[in-house]
Image (cartoon, rainbow over all chains, first blue to last red; front, top):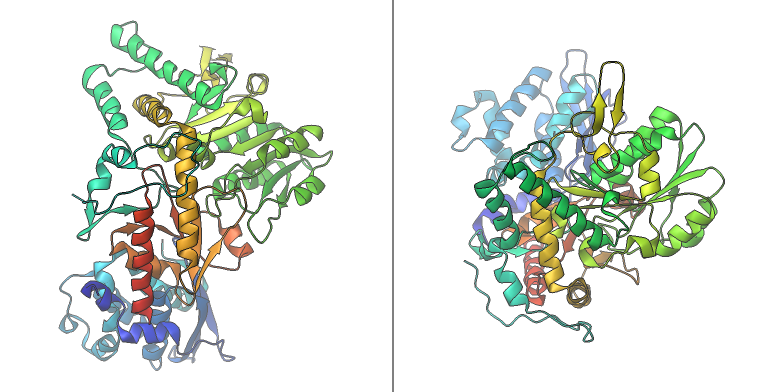
Length: 156
Length: 422
């Protein structure tokens, strides 16, 4: 099997794609947004529960999509808990670089993001598949949109 | 360069029609010799856009190199020469569709523009409460222009439901026709399901109700012989790039008496008779609808594509593709967990499918690594995806250069998809 494909579809991705974590609509959610990829019709809705200080207490999602977009949403819900708004946004910046920049390594990321990025690194295979970057970042765009006050985010 | 390992023969084609040598045809298409990711290209996306034969490339190149000028303007030789050739393509298109006159052929950029032309020019005469009928299997290009018209003019849009096997429901259609129906706008062949709609009967019923019919022929013209007079179609649209021609050249056929009564679509040069600040008068059809410098060289390319297709023969192409469709349906049907969308009796060589538990987008990426180009996504037909409760499908669409080997390569690639997803 093609190595680039193996890099893209690592076991962790296939596992999260088939058995996504936090696939639910939490009752305590106070922010939400829908992410939409017009290219393939994939949709995810991200739910966030934040406290008065903007700290993320719970993250979950609902939606349908390809293995990459669902695995990415699932992994995102696992790394965002306990982060502040600002930390979540910064992590997305670093994650975006991880998905798009050739030669980007974790020591180039903010020190506080490295642990989460180690977990997200399984998604870096999309670098070789530019059309799939949108799949990997769909949930993150929606998460940012939820922090901004809700509404729809698209990967366009 | 790709090499062909086995003899390619059209499977189970109609023997009554002269078959053609598909290997020789393939040699006419330079792109088919390319490799992708180290694998020979297997191109199964002609429904999105077809590849171009050398004859088309050379015809366009020759114009740019030897006689390029603007048309309808110059008193000099090249301009007159190219105007004659440009207008000559109109004649070729008229013959392709069996239109009664060249003057019924309007050049557009594509089908989308052709439909928008009708929606604007013909559509603006409609008033609130008037009805336009479309169907569940329309391409966005035959949905959104009518929604825009609805927003502008308050018309009502009626949607014909389709059957589970993807066939057109004449009964449902007939019940939607009524005294308020002002236009019927339907596809001749679904770009997703491959369904060929019973257009002659659709048009007969519409005319009985007093409504003209616009046919989206983007997929139909490439797979079969179309005769607008036999159909009695009022408008018929197709595009060059799916017919092995260049992009940015499309055609709107319109009956002369309809076009004559229609106001201009876009204003500008070439579509006028005389212009003053007080009053401007417009050219007769078809030039009334061709504002600005047209896609001159693209039209020449389309002419070359029509000659090419005619040289092989549309009946032979249809027979070849019928064989491919039968083979693809059988072979894909044998893949466990594969579901085909669209099993209408009358069907073009387009097969949409899903694999259990694997998203089409993932299928597309993985088969691409095997050199296989298929379309995955909603195919600009999101309401149809909703109808079948899927976010997307994978689609193999075949053209005159495809072979049963191409289908075998796809089936082997799908096995790799399943292997990866365990």
